[in-house]
Image (cartoon, rainbow, N blue to C red; front, side, top):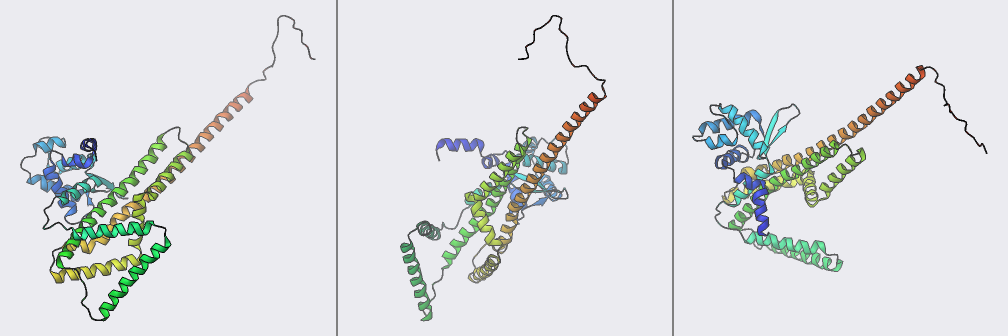
Length: 367
């Protein structure tokens, strides 16, 4: 990244603008406690207003904060909380999501998720894991080489080597040799990496959902243009939808989510999680067990946001087509009605002689 790019980010990046807010020193802790501490993805409006009112009641000096949200002197905690929520939605710290019954729910925006992800990287760690990350890099390097080459002979040789390694490990166990397992340090190191990746993945789901919402806005904008035909709008909508699915992010998301909701994925994840929790308990390793127990359900809940956004896009697309067709039919009926009125008006008029008179004789040649 060039220095010019950093300068641009300071002015254009919403996560950086959130961190630089004048009242970020209490707003971010409040949002973290309200959503992240208990892994709560959404809060109802009454619930969040109540929590925020309690937070505001505990504040001692909020003059600067009141100016930020245009709060007048003497307003009650509930009124102030409502204005703060409106302010945070406008600044895109939060997203307000109405349910089918019209009740408002709030969730963290993708920008606020990025802020929390970055803040977590600033926490002091007992040690910086290098061994597990290096092996992850090495495995990725091997996969890139193995899965991108089209040399069948080389691939066959690599598979034979893997087969020989597996057979050697099987014989070693059959002869009663000691089983090679991770040390406690290696377990802790990999748990740290797993937890970090899990949090980042949850944040990525929000970003995919934002991409779908951008597609919805694009469809509405095209629909609002008077010169945009039905075919143009529909074509652009499907092209945008296909582009998202076929993008690197789209391909990765759908491949992961399809595996996660599959019967094999569900069963394998549950068995591995149960075994890992037993191992952690036996080794007395400190870990975020709540995250490990609920990560699958959390990912499923966030993944549904993407599919629901997809459904909303299809619904809006259908509505656009219907509205366009109905508008065209209304215009056609109006034009036909106008023509009928003109014809009926001419029919009721007396016969009008057709022709004209000339004052001077004119020679007309018929041949």
